[in-house]
Image: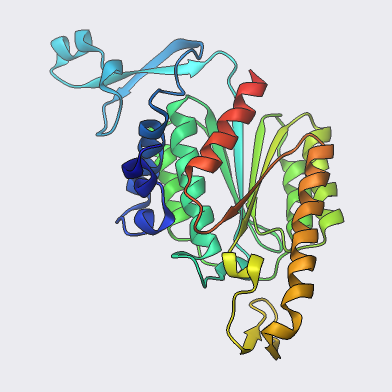
Length: 299
């Protein structure tokens, strides 16, 4: 991937853009530049309807005959014959508000990633929905496939704030009951919950014949405990504080975190759930590649 494409895909660069729609568009376009080919090629589509042209739409889909009659630009909109339904589930609990080494919080990273995925999915004519959760399901949007609906989802993501404690397992189990039609489930979370319960909830989606991707978002400091000397730590969800000498527990901490990540990864693999660990400094191409890999398996 070219250096310029990698720069566009970094969280630091994306965070400096003014709107969520612009961030989503740049994430996807930067990814495509890096690939040197379009992932849209080869998907079977059938004609569905026209809609008004919007800046950023592929001009190859403009219906010039309609333009000749009306002097207005309209897009030939298509719908996948397979009609994939995709659901993006974003953890917005307080622990997702953490930031130290990265340019963005875990929640900001999750929101930008979700925005990029929504933009890419809808460009592929995949109907896409969104759920925001913490202890419970905060917001839920059924999958649809229109430009105005994409803007609604991106607006929801742009205003996200971390709140309440984590209960990923409970929220995911609730969502598995609400999602009636099988499709692609993408969970974006730090998964700081009981691993066994989280896997049980993810398996709930698999039992209903859904494809599942788990994006595990952590700050580099959470992975490596890179803090100086005596440090005061505050639990973002309980407010509990503890002061400790980092060097005294770094080895044990690293072993525990590595075990947590390894256990989650292995359990996902055993249940045919795609897993990707992403730090908040990881360029977004890794996540988009993981998504396209799973989507290819579906078709």
